[in-house]
Every structure is written in C-alpha cells, then in structure tokens.
Image 1 (cartoon, rainbow, N blue to C red):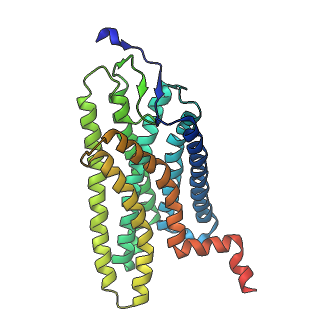
Image 2: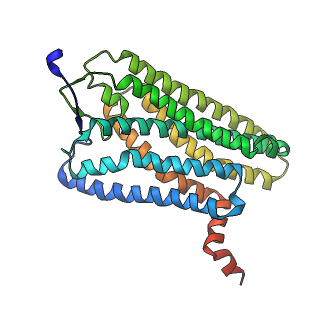
Image 3: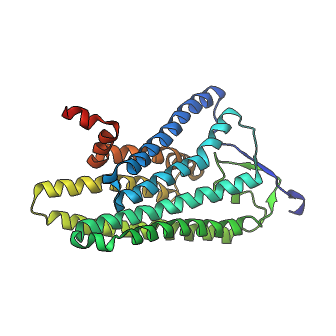
Length: 312
C-alpha cells in the first residue's frame, strides 16, 4: 500500500459521464438556475432590508436562510459549471478540502435555521401573547449565532479527521464536487471513524432537528384547528405552508442521502439527489416564500411602487 500512496496535490472531479453536447446543454441550463438562485435570494434579502414591515423575527431568520442558500449554491455550482466545460480540469487539494468544509458548514447551518424558524412559528401561533417576550431580538440573534457556530464547529471536526488521511494515487473523485464520502473513498487508510462521524453528524443534525420540526408543527396545527375564525385559520396555514414546503424539500432529500436505506445504484442516486439539494433547493426556496407569502408579495409591490401607483 505504501507504493500506492502519494502526496496528493490535486483531484479530478468526474462529474456526470455525458457526451459533449449534453454537457454544453446542462452548462447553459444550470447557469440559468444558478443566476436565478442568486437573484431570487438576493431579492428576498433586498425586500427584508428595504421594507420596515418585514423587520420581524420571522423575516430576520428568512434573511439568514437566503444568505445560506446563496452561499450553499456558490460552494458547489461554480465548480460543477467549470467541470461541464473542462471535465479534465483538476481541483487543488486545498480547494477540494475548502469546498468540503464550506458545503458541510452551510448544510448544517441551514438544518438548524429551519428548526429555529419552525420554533418561531410555534411561538407565534401557540403563544401569541408572549411572542414579543419569548422571541426578543436578543434571543433571535443568539439562535442565529448558535446555528452558524454549530455549523462551523461540526464541519471543522470532519475536516480535522479528513486532512491527516493518506490518499492513494487514484485522484479521481466520482462526484461533481468534493463531497466528503466521495473524498474518503480515495483514502489509503481505515476511514471507519470518519464514516461513523459522518453518520453520527447526519443523525444529529437531520433526524433530531427534523423530529423537533414535526413536533412543532403538530402543536401548531392543533392550535390552528382550535381557532374559531376561519380567516384566522387561513392566515395561519398560509404563514406556515411556505416554511413547511422548504422543510420537506430540504430534510427529505438530506435524510434519503445520508440516513435512508440504499437501493439500486446508491452512488448515482446520491449524486443526483445532491444536485437537486445544492442547485434546485436554493432556487426554489425564494419562489416558495414569494408565491405563498402575501406579506412578501405586498412588500415587493411597495418597494417597486406598484401599490402607490394603483391607489392613484
């Protein structure tokens, strides 16, 4: 095994085994999706910062979710686009490790932010009279800081375990970015501890938080059904439905990838699920919040001056 090990300085990402014409087609398509992701989340951030009516805890958390979604897409998509144009272009070892760290950080942070947002909705609907006391700005900032801190620290643990590993001469990563499990497959050493930590991390930031979200929404729906006003029920459902859609998309694909059972060709399945997770989820999130949230739509009209124009 000693002869097969080398000081690795770069990797080659194999991406998707497609012909040149298909790669060019996907490059154009994914480039548009990437621009829409940045534009959509940028619009959400702009609306929240410009409209004072959106300066509430709910939209404070949403602004951080938009930041994470943009960063999440930026950590994987540009390299994937480069690979579609130049499949043989290598990525440096440092660049690969950095990409792994950033992807894990943003993924874990988003998991925790979605839990924080569900807790915010739980307090707003189940304890409306105490909402301003429980969800003070100090508490909101603390929850966001904790989410980001856990994301960074958990990613650092994986990084500390990954960097010392010796890598074999085979430098080809069967993925479109430096996903941690794909990188571990190139190591010429026992990666049992690394894989165990990945599984433990996935369970701790996916299964546990997702269970908390489910419990929160069970309490929320019970509280909504007890409301006497039909209008109140409709408004409460409308407020929660957008967040519930985002939670379903994010946790659903993530749990299938890292915790769920394996069928058929799990390597290829995981690759396409991660493509959906890193490209389509961040693009869909602002659309879901815009289309399903009347406050965001009204804020957009106010910022664009449509509301004042219609009143004339």
